[in-house]
Length: 283
Ligand SMILES: NC(=O)c1ccc[n+]([C@@H]2O[C@H](COP(=O)([O-])OP(=O)(O)OC[C@H]3O[C@@H](n4cnc5c(N)ncnc54)[C@H](OP(=O)(O)O)[C@@H]3O)[C@@H](O)[C@H]2O)c1
Image 1 (tube, rainbow, N blue to C red):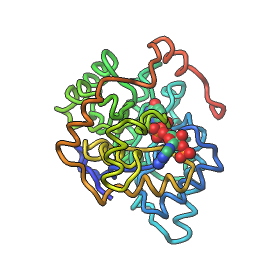
Image 2 (cartoon, rainbow, N blue to C red; image 1 turned 90 degrees about the horizontal axis):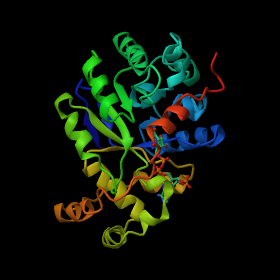
Image 3 (cartoon, helix red, strand yellow; image 1 turned 180 degrees about the vertical axis):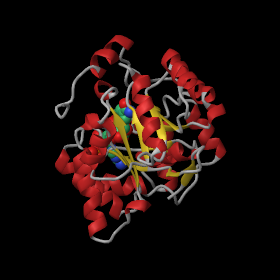
Image 4 (tube, protein in one colour; image 1 turned 90 degrees about the vertical axis):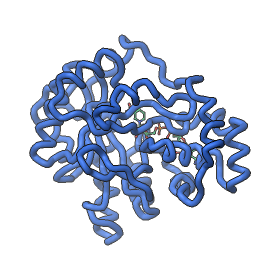
């Protein structure tokens, strides 16, 4: 496993497993299997409705002596409708059955996101979150957050893959040392990205799959990458990417795809409507 060091000195694995749209039962199995295969980073969110399942998968691996909690890196995200709920972090930890998370995000720049970020800062100061993140922040909301936050975000989670590397946003946060964790690294399962000529050619050269080439590219870009999967063969393959290195010429060739596509193109109004959705467990 390769790691990157955040601006506060915390080490984060460059590769993890995502759990968006994975049912609780599949999540327990994916998380447990991934840990067994050597994954250390697991990404979830209040809104994925599987934090309890992540906690169960982790607990199973710990109980079986496969791993210790301190060797794992767990990230989760507060949902906008509970940004102002003072027990939001405690409730999240309870669902995960953990005393702390390694990374805590505000999920969307919607609602009172500064109130949400203040909760994150409080959790950071009392050790309940070891690092802080923002997810889906661009433009005006990003500027407000950077200006008003006391502890600058260590990580930003954005849609990122070979079609979209968000260079402008990465440049904007460089002075704070904020690193990118990319979501939809495999285009949310888009078969088209796997068939891109450059990936098919490199897959053949390195005896890997297109998915493995894309994930290796992401880690060589220093993007923390969290492919989602409930398929243990995919989880195994996605973890098997550190025994080869793409050349500078190959990285340059892949860079030609940058800026050509974004999968999630919701308007600000659509995001606000989505983010106002209450979660079933809300009190
Ligand atoms: N912050 C945010 O707003 C946000 C939004 C979206 C996602 N995320 C995070 O980012 C993570 C990744 O995004 P994602 O899961 O939506 O998309 P993704 O990782 O780009 O793609 C997941 C899809 O790819 C398939 N897949 C995985 N490995 C494969 C392989 N080796 N070969 C072929 N297909 C493969 C999976 O199917 P199988 O299950 O069959 O393997 C699944 O359908 C999420 O799980 C979540 O943690 C965050």
